[in-house]
Structure formats: structure tokens, C-alpha cells
Length: 368
Image (cartoon, rainbow, N blue to C red; front, side, top):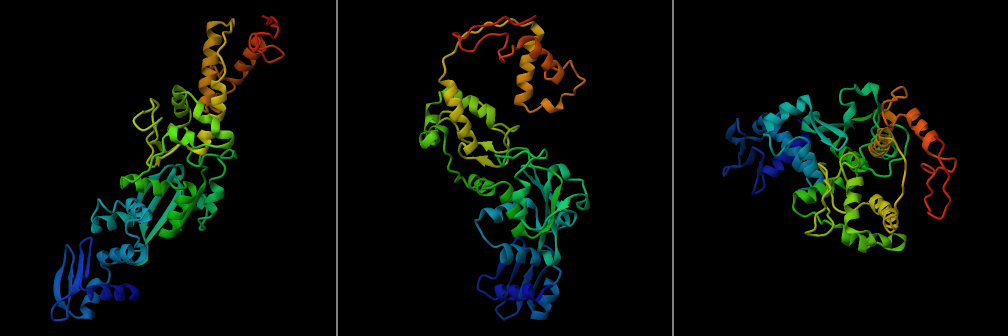
């Protein structure tokens, strides 16, 4: 047992309130001796050397020191998050230490966080992508500086920029294999900014939700038009951008207080308290599109071609185009089948079936 831990225990035990934390009770008797109690032990009248013998190796003592002298920060998001990582509020110390020796795993979006026991009860953390759960650290690019998480979160596995940090596109192939609690939380907060704080606020009943109407009316500059987006179109926005396949947050904002959107809000562990900048930027374009008047167009398509266009829309919307094999011409989003449809139904000016977008534009027959 480290001398600093024992000195802190003696100091705390000598105060009026002593130590009372998760099954550990240590204090002074009236005659000046020490009391030491755990669920398995109850002794009194101890000399300091006897207290040391009982405290040395006790998980109750190292657990107290870790939480009360190392982490501290009562009532903070970080402390609550770390306790969640080892189910500290659901499991007793002995049971938790047994589990920590083998590793306790929790997930946060696409992050896998494994807590284990370090020297003298200090926790150590392994943070990686959930897809790399079973890979040895030697097979991954390893880091120890939490700031490296900024670069890891910038691009997806295909090298594309990730404008939305909570999109389910976090790249794989890396690990932070041996972090202390400070660094572990910093990695999490770097990959998913503000999620720990918002999760904690929601848990405490203090999440300040900013609904669409208020957020839209607050926009200025080029975005001040988004408050003109029709009510039903906001549902389309939520369905397009705020579901599990597109964002790992759980949408808590609605159109307005008491006016819920029909679109599903997702099942993420951390809440979304307001329309994000990506949604607002996209809504600017959708507002302009919704301002257009509808027109009626007449196209000549076979039933299979109609179904193919529907399949293409689904494949693009669900980011499944790359999953369609070149040889599988039975799939509507197959590249060769799509090129065939273009050759048949799209003219040299890019018009479907030769039909102009502007009715004043002359139409040309599409070759059969």
C-alpha cells in the first residue's frame, strides 16, 4: 500500500466524520484507537500499525482512495461517467473488483471503453472502436495522447471528412490501450464533444432542450430563412438526418414544446438537445427547395424501371451503393444497370425521358 494512501486514510479517519464510503468505515474511538469496518471485518481499538495491516491490500480502502482522493469531483459529469463505466452504483466493491480484474466494458456510441484495475486500485482504461473489440492492441495503431483522438475522428475509413462527429462513421484500427481516468475521459470528450455533459444533465433532470422553432428563429445571416421551413418539412428533416443510421445521438428536440415530430428520435445513449449546425445548414437548402411550386411531369417508364429508380433512391439514402456488386445486375442500384437506364432514358442534356425541367424548354424525344 502506498504511503500516500495510508496517510490520507489516517488523516480522514481522524476527523470528526471519519470515513464512510461504499462499505468502508474508519474512524477514531473515544480512547484514541482506530475503528476499521468493512462488510467482512469489524474491529476497534486498533493501533496505527494494526490499522495499516488491515488497510493494506483492502479493496475497500483503495476504492475509497481512488474515488475520494483521486477522482473527487462530486456532482460532476466526469465522475458520473467513470462510475457508469464500472457500474459502480449497481455493484458492490468486492464484486466490482472481481469484474475489474477481468475488465469491465461499456460502450459510448462507437467507442468501447474497458476499465481494469491498476496498481493500488487505480483504474486503467482501454479505449477503441467497438469493431476492434477482439483485436490485440499490437494489431492496432496505438496512442497515449488524448489529443490524437482529434485526428482519428476527422476522417472515416474511406478517408472522407466527417462533418458530424456523432455520425456512425468513426474510423477503426486504433486504440488507446493504457490510460488513466483523466486521459480516458478526454478521449471520449474529444471524439464525441459535449456528450458526457449532456448525458449527465439529462440524468439529473437538467437538460435544457432547444426545440426546432426556437432554434430556427434564433438563426441570423444566411440561415435566417430556416424558420420559414413548413412544419411538415421539419419532420422530413428529422427523418433524413436524426435517426440512428445517420447520428448516434438521441434526438430530444421536437418542433416545439408540446408539438412532437413523428420521426423517430433514435436510441443513442447521449441526448441531442438542439438542432445541430449540420441540420441547420441542410435546412437552409431544404427551405429554398420547399419554396418551389410543384409541377406535373409525364414520364414513360416500364414497371421495372420505376422500381429501379425507387431502389436507387433507397440505396443512396442508406449509403448502400458501394455494397452492390458490379456483377449483380438484378439489383436496382447496380452500376451497369443504372448506366443502361441512363443510356435509354436520359438525353444528352441530362433530362429524364427528354422531359425539360422548365416547361418553356423544348422537349426532345428519348430514343428507344
